[in-house]
Image 1 (cartoon, rainbow, N blue to C red):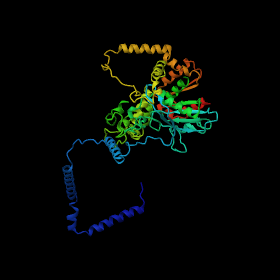
Image 2 (image 1 turned 90 degrees about the horizontal axis):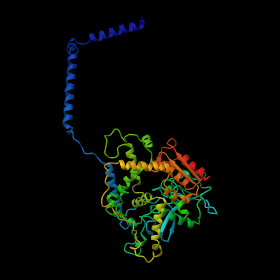
Image 3 (image 1 turned 60 degrees about the horizontal axis):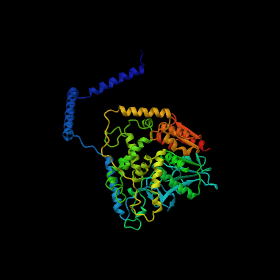
Image 4 (image 1 turned 180 degrees about the vertical axis):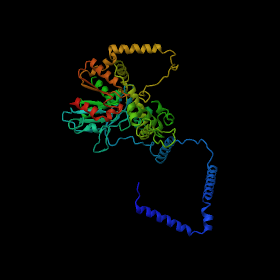
Amino acid sequence: MSISRPLMASGRAMRLEIQRRASQIPPRFLAQHVRPLQHSTKQAAQAAAASQHEDQSARSQARPPPSNTPLSFPCLDASEQRTQQLASKRSQRSSLSGPEPSYTSGHTELFTSEQPLLLDWGGVLPSFTVAYETWGELNAEKSNAILLHTGLSASSHAHSTEKNPKPGWWEKFIGLGAPLDTNKYFVICTNVLGGCYGSTGPSSADPSAKGTSEEGRRWATRFPILTMQDMVRAQYKMLDWFGIEKLYASVGSSMGGMQSLAMAVLEKDRVVLMNDPAWASTRGNYYDSIPPHSGMKLAREIATVTYRSGPEWENRFGRRRADPSKPPALCPDFLIETYLDHAGEKWCLEYDANSLLYVSKAMDLFDLGAENMSLLDKSRRDNIWKLEHFQNATAEEVKDSCSLTLPDEPYEEQENSSDIMAASSDTKASHVQSGPPEDLIRGLSPMKDIPTLVLGVASDILFPAWQQREIAETLRRAGNRSVTHVELGEDRSLFGHDTFLLDLEGVGGEIRRFLG
């Protein structure tokens, strides 16, 4: 290895300069300053250690003793705050009948019938209103009308209008060139009877109180029990007013599918909410006080879980927490919990609690089997006098006769379920051999000449695909030769029940092909 001469010369010069400067330092200074170098370093280290120990001791004395502090509950604080705000609004607007949540969906058209409407279970509406919206033009023959039925909580605002430009819940499915093409069809969407978006429901004024000291009171739980068929009869009254004798099509998903089936048949011839103190303490007559927002929020959260499929929830949220940097909490903490909490918060004052109970009950009662339809026909015949004598009848005479009688002995679980399982197996085996129930086949026989599209979604747990297969098979056995059955597998949609809102290609495409 070789080193260049300039570098060697530079090194020799540096050594000489160091020696020269060192020779200028007094010997006494060298003795006092240079020699004790290691000793002073040791003292400094000891001093630093002592100082550090004193700091730690001081911090230890200042820190409070460890304890288990109570958790905070922002979710409960928010609910209590909402109750206080509603109470405050009520006190500020004492001239009103109560707090007014934003139930309405925006501008709607109104059809009002002054003729009384007899309901399946014996109740009577002295008059009623149906709120609706339309898109497209009704042709001269009035033969291009499509009636679109809503789900449980949706409003008539399926698509934007000039008077209400806010996007609707089926915005992409309606319009020029859309599956419900407004170049070809006159599309009508109504708010269901019993709802709270403008059609007559529990939150509407009770006409029987007119001229009394209670004039202006709400129906509340005086509102009579409804069926899907009752909702459809109100829609038929509206269609008569339009002069529409026959629909081009009746379209509906979720609860709307129930209405669509009920309309086709007629053409030819819950607990969480009720346990909310605001509902229970008033027995549903809460319109002059605080609405049951906590129960509504929880009901919505529970329902939202069923609107999508398990795999879809897993893909979106998994087990991720909203903020992993913070300790776990009992309030919504996982990302899915915060999503459901937000869904409940957003909706708890947007829909009337009694409407939810009544419309949900109508869904529970939905049965187009021949036996049930015969039962309802008898009920209507037995109560027809209420229409004939409505003007002179007393309130007691026309009161809804529906009541609940609890059994004397509560249901007890069987110690041995083998008999139940055996009976269940026999029923399943019988169904496999014979197909759909004969009672349902007879009930749907009025639809034998009506072309029908039945669309199921494999990931839907609310209206499972096997039920849609059963409907299609039942219609065919009833003599319908124009049944189109489509099932979207999980390879096409994991959106579950909400597929009808989101899958424009799958759902919209099938509707477009079916309508031609």
